[in-house]
Length: 238
Image (cartoon, rainbow, N blue to C red; front, side):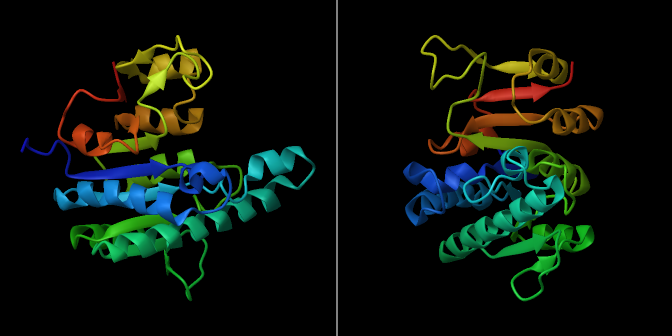
């Protein structure tokens, strides 16, 4: 087997991915499939932290656009990410991987509070750490939370796992002629508005020189990318 490329990574999953074909809620079969991909990475000896969105349950930004107070909507979205984190934790532990959910909003009955040093210690002990409830603040997306936690936990890379194979010039689901990029700079992403992650997350990664890897979450590409194989899209500095 090839040598692993990274020691510690932050894996960002969209909440919608957990819904599978249902488009809403949590599909246990889909969650199990995604967790098997995550488990393969952890089995390589790579320390894994996760940030999961909540769009399969509640999306704060779209609700605020319909008249709900933005802060209230965002807090509701943060709670949705905790539900997703618990579902993923349950499945990972069934696969034999000790997992800890650390929430930016304190709820001691179901998970630990997010404390950076505690999270680092869990990772050092081989536990998969799921960082829930975003940053704990409204007006910040889970993309930004992923970038922030990636910096705090000294991760070698941010891995964004999606339903497609990488970053395209347009939506490959809607456009058959969409072209996938193999490599991009942070400036390219910002200037072309490619939607890899939101601009705050991209800027945070750029300023701290942490690459973003974008790949398919269902096809084993996460593991292959960890081994340095030429799959997905890499976003990095000049």
